[in-house]
Amino acid sequence: MIKPDEAIDIIIENTSLSDIQTKNILDCMDFVLAEDIYSSEDLPSFDKSAMDGYAIKINDEKEFEIIGTIKAGDYYNDELQSGKTLKIMTGAAFPNGADSVIQIEKVDVKDNKLIIHDEVEKGLNVIKKGSQIKSNDLVLKKGTVIRPYEIGLLASLGYDKLKVYGSPDVSLLITGDELVDINEKLENGKIRNSNGYSLFGLVKRSGANPLSMNIVKDNKDILKQSIIDAFEKSDIVITSGGASVGDYDFVEDVLEEIGADVKFRKIKIKPGKPLVFAKYNEKLFFGLPGNPLSSINVFEQFVQAAISKMIGKSTEYDYIDLIAGEDFKDKKGRTTYFYVNIKKHKDKYYAYKSGGQSSNSLKTISNSNGLIVIPEKVENVKMGEFIKGRFLI
Image (tube, rainbow, N blue to C red; front, side, top):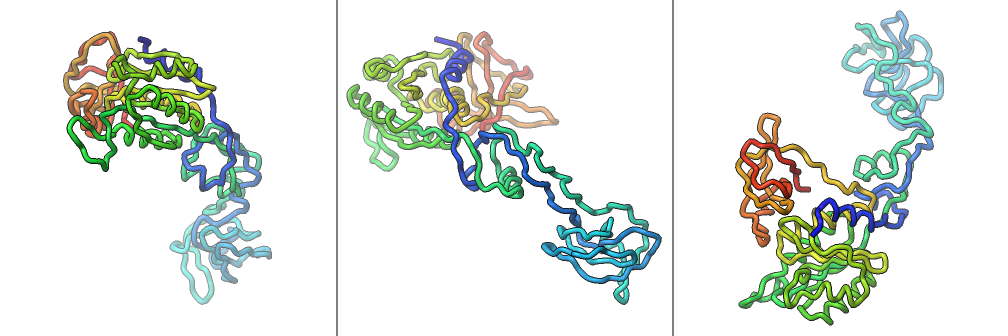
């Protein structure tokens, strides 16, 4: 068995960035920029009013003649003369000759005259050209994750297409004679295929494309052909079950027969010790354990790192210091991922048990909003002690 940090290093070392794709900006949500973005223009591209009011040139006068209105989208071609004013709407182009906008609420209007009572600061309520972004400024760095906010920013600068890292295609092969699909009759000795659905959701949320989710019988020849077929159409092949040492666990045998390069077979973690990681024709293979909680945990700790590397995202989670809200018992020897509920109290975060940690317990993880990591040399964590943890995505 190897340590989890070693496993992550091996996975990252053997994972390459996906090919760069050019996409319409509306199709780039959650993708990662594969280029630096520079502005080709100022933002805003003209001086404009920050609010509804009156554009004036400050002088000693307290009364101004109102000579017109500028609404958003209009442009005043002439020079505004001293003693004159234009009513102006929020976002409208600021007229030449003026230097300030006084709010509607701070003036009186009588007989087409604007009457000012208070002193007005020069430049008040004017958004200057290029005050947000200047031409040739670096707007977004390569590696930025595209969110709705970045989409809006880039749209304001006239970008309709972006270069981003593509999403890997993933095939899911769920092994086991005991499995039936969720809409099939549940007979004695059979269980529903929960792993396929959990992993499909995890793959999709990770930023990859789940192509298929097939149940494969415990037959070596069938599994071999299924894996070969999956590699032909996928960048990553994931199996669930069949990666241990039972009589019907054929994953390692199949990988050897097809000539895959197996990098490791077991990790010193709990839950999820049996994890096979291999490369085949520059594509990745992950053989996950069959127990539901183990399968999910191994995906989140290791498969997620590979997908993140491929799509240009950070491969590390943000861990924080938590306080144990109760005792957590564990055995030394393996790093343990303990699914918990994290609660905030007086600016501190506390971890509490959310259920039994059996590798079969989907209910526990469903009840959880986070996890803690108990190092392999630690046997027990006492209430009040600090422990590393994170919120679940």
